[in-house]
Amino acid sequence: MPATFDWDDSEEIGIQLSEKFPDLDPLTVRFTDLHKWVTELAGFTGDPKMSNEGKLEAIQMAWHEEFQDRQG
Image 1 (spheres, rainbow, N blue to C red):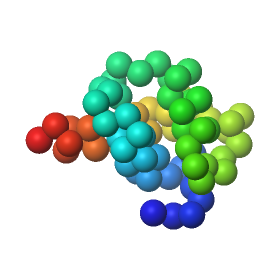
Image 2: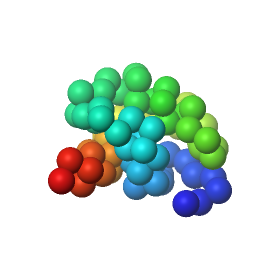
Image 3: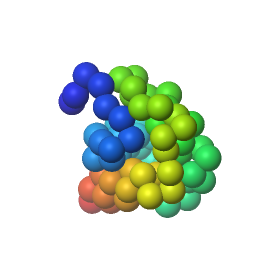
């Protein structure tokens, strides 16, 4: 796990979100909530204003992969 990460580290963010919200289906999360949760993660150093729909979608998909892996 890197000490710090930003918007471009969608895989790392997906892993951390799946650990923080293990039972939550990421496809049900609004981008406004996703943005807030990402910026609150320990080690996140990205500028909140540098987010965009493409970055949030990449994070959501990485989180969804982790979610599916956990569901077995």
